[in-house]
Amino acid sequence: MWLHMGQHAVNLVAILDSPMDIAIVVLVVLILFGGKKIPEMMRGIGSGIKEFKQGMRDEPAPTPSASTTTTPPPVEPKK
Image 1 (cartoon, helix red, strand yellow):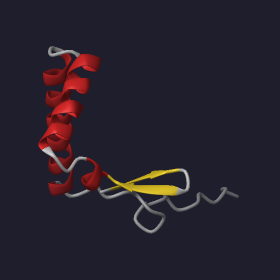
Image 2: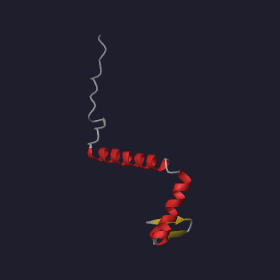
Image 3: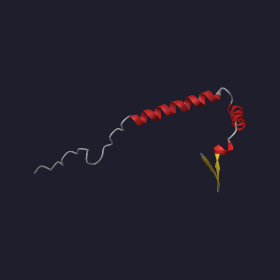
Image 4: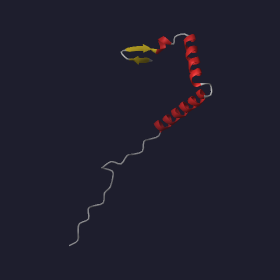
């Protein structure tokens, strides 16, 4: 995974290559968001993924186009 920062591209896997680096990132995330907020965020992400997968499985509803819509024939004025 690459992160582009301006003109420089940084490989995120190369940055987080040791368990200590990952532990530091986890600690910073816990400090920023708190232990209570993280499960709520993960639950939201999980439900979003479920909805996305469900949407991908469902067939899209056909959209009306000019060829499929029926218009009544024009009414001619009576003489």
